[in-house]
Image (cartoon, rainbow, N blue to C red; front, side):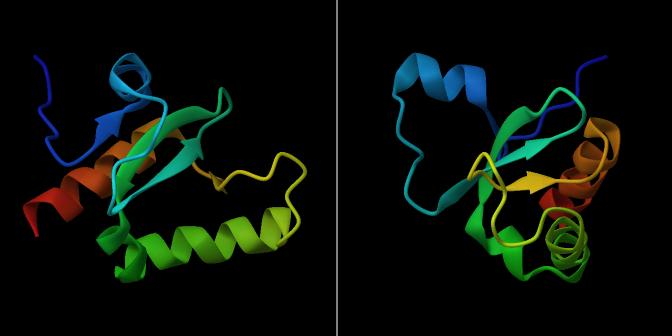
Length: 88
């Protein structure tokens, strides 16, 4: 059974269409494999998402070596969170 998440754009589809991130979205990298997700910037204001951002700051600091926004959680946790945010 597939889970449909219209507000999350998977990186593969973005790269096929364009290498640019759509206006109003931000790319984040999640999990051990650093899978790329493109999510609406409105998610950044949600308390649960801010908790992940605080964890990222604690783990990586502001000077992350790769220069990308990496969230310290599993893909499953991230998908659960974003699914919840999609319903809100």
